[in-house]
Length: 404
Ligand SMILES: Nc1ncnc2c1ncn2[C@@H]1O[C@H](COP(=O)(O)OP(=O)(O)OP(=O)(O)O)[C@@H](O)[C@H]1O
Ligand SMILES: [Mg+2]
Image (cartoon, rainbow, N blue to C red; front, side, top):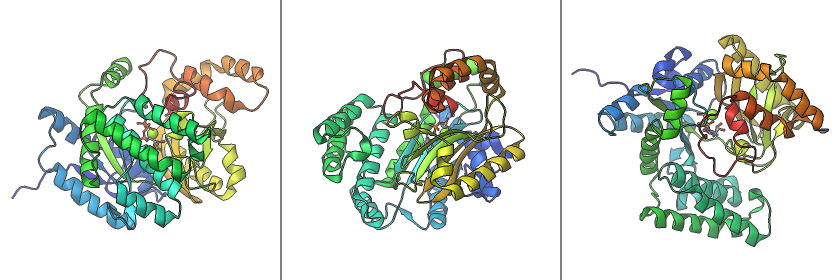
């Protein structure tokens, strides 16, 4: 019997050379895994599968779903957790990632696997009901928006109202008593908008999220971006399914996005944003001001040193400045993305050194206040299509997002 076509690769099976097939994000995750760096385990559905999906008018190609389920089994073994397990649930992210970077133009769903039972399990396991409820409301919000196309404003409005009622200013201040009714409200919004119950089966959630990521290759936003960047329309996106790690599990957790060099001066120093006790999306969402990456050196010097070592290693390996995403879960570092910061982006930064210094001289405090705003304009000198809107409107109109 001929061997079935291979649509799914574990990160341990891929490498940087397989960028065409695995996309930049998948190939990067595989290469970091091969180098022994702490990457949450996962697998990549190939760009070829996406092309086959479109060729058949939006259907998963033969054998894909079976391979996803088999890939999930391997992932569960590596993670030591199972999707949908009410005692110790595995949660995953489902991430887009084409051969060429299209920052923020396609979709990603985080915290997938949560339902009534797994959220309870997560609360017991982490002894943190607030964390579990917050993760669940984020998931409903992201799934509703990304997979079902529900207007994000509907969730955002409910969240703002909940904060007003609770008399608090920021999301982390919402306590379980506030979050429980908010989750119920989010589920009601979902039902009202889709005329269906929110899918409680994590495997069904996974199938829908993969389908949505494939579809996000062909949104108007993505198509416009490709036209401007001269990226061919027929490449398709890969889909990465990866174990979630949590930067929002207290003060020894956090998340950040960082260049391996100062992109303006070229100095070999980490340059980017860090946010303690937050999930990746928060860096761009404008929930709180980010800190410069040096804050991590103060908070957790050992983790910073480890991250700096990986950053140097990756830059040397790829022979190019890298743009990195990472998350720290209770003191443990995880590498989530590496990509070359494109010469175009670097050129535009260098040519705008003047605006950088004039911006900084107007701001008496440290850089972060002006940096994101500045970088947004530097990185994308020409107008680009609106990046995928985050869970809320970014405070600095797509600044950190532009970095990604
Ligand atoms: N498994 C995971 N655990 C924790 N955080 C994650 C995980 N997967 C993704 N993230 C974070 O979620 C955010 C969004 O993910 P992702 O990198 O897929 O999309 P993006 O950064 O918005 O766009 P781009 O396609 O340009 O990378 C990022 O901050 C990323 O680091
Ligand atoms: Mg990213």
